[in-house]
Image 1 (cartoon, chains in turn cyan, purple):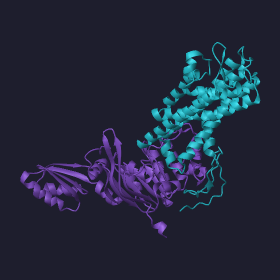
Image 2: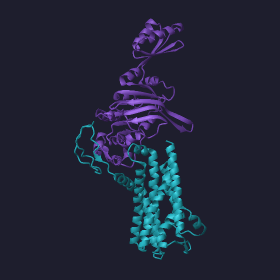
Image 3: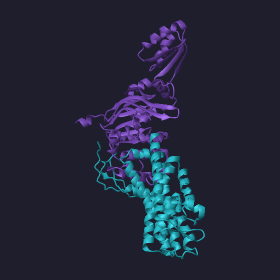
Image 4: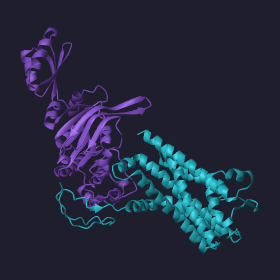
Length: 286
Length: 310
């Protein structure tokens, strides 16, 4: 049914559109192999091009680290297996990482409902592959603020044992994925880009309650322990602090590891159940 | 070969209803349709006739409430998964922050094998705008991009849902020119439209859908002959109306005669002949001839009391 016999090499990924081979008016055989990594690559390029998002994901946490971590007078004070600068560094990297994953999760929901889902429905791409693709993108983008803030940390005197550095980074990367579900929930429930912005904005509140920006104490700290960012950040800090929390008065409180783990486990379950329910609901409406 | 004998599309007793706040909406009330391979078929009907829903089922985007749909001898999803069928959707969202070329590359990556990206960009006439952001593309360019995406798997069956909605006349012509080339290559094309002219100039067969059912189905010239009629209306003496109606019904060119008290309304493909007979032989007065605009004729043909305003 097709007649052309072009032998031009495949040029996927080449940005030069001018050198079209002279083919007949009908098409070519489907002879080019689908490039498995192209979806991830293009999604990444697309996210990194969004400068406003990247400012909040990378720029703001880096700036806050320099302000509250590196240049603060207490930065060289000891904090467990490292110093306070490292403690602040982990906090800010966490904020950047979750901002990234909330945005990616939320936009995934919104773009699917705004018709991209129908477009993808015309391709062989399965739901599982789509979710995996988005998860990889979320992981990579979440790694960026961690990388930038950690490099800043190295350059500005954050200190700690190897376990404190690497352990915290590992927890930050893996744990950030649960907040993709948080963004997804907002996107599915409210179906608009504004909802995703709101979800990212709500991270500021959760960040305060998560003990990220400012050490909490007393009643507020007791409440904060039950909020989602608290578990994530305290788990990431565990390799550094071994559970000790600095409160407003500079005193130390020790928390058991199981508390952070339980917090993360419970919130991940809540997010997963809510997201699943919302996905089912949106399917039923079609 | 039995595989080549299976129809491109085979729809049997399809119904589809949606739950809504006002109760259940019956979008499709029983459609049977078989499209042979290589045919170019237009599904013509007003908005809300059930065209989009039917095509969605054929593409596996929604499940039928009842009835069966086979696409190239397999289930719709299987046909999509293997790249045998693809589509240009009316409301398929595109990612606004990707460029035209990136969009093609991204969708291409979902196929095991696909036509070269360069190639489909050129065939959809997008080479000049390939590095433009989707958000900066006109409606026509975005539609040609959806068309390029549909060409990627080199499908045997192309489905188009109102492909030229929102395009101006020249964009519309350019789109159908590109489409002609694909149909000439032997692809089966099934498209929905509410423009009679489009169905007329591009399809070899027209399926009229109204109110969730097939109202007429036949070769384009037959359907056009029915749709392109004119309406002749006249007043007669009350006692002469019935005889006149019978006389007119016997004329070959007359399709329908309606009697409303002392007024006759005749739908015909030869308004001159009908007018002559009415004035010279039947003693009619107050004669009016209205050129059936295509839309009006179409509405008459599908005779849907509501929702036919489109």
